[in-house]
Length: 67
Image (cartoon, rainbow, N blue to C red):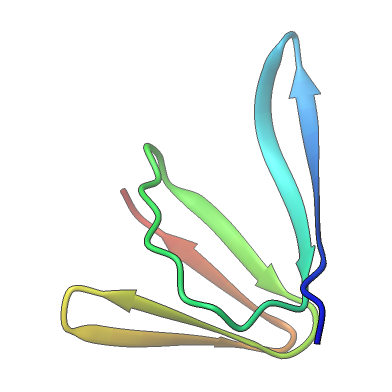
């Protein structure tokens, strides 16, 4: 299966403050986020691995990730 992703940012006076991401990727990627952020999963499930814990954000759920 070919991976596709699309990211759309909201620009506020030159500062990107939010984004929507559409992807069909199932790969794991380590990521550092410099601020808190809110996640909404429209379809499927997002698995967040933080230290030795796994957090699941399921379809039609929100998750708040703290810095």
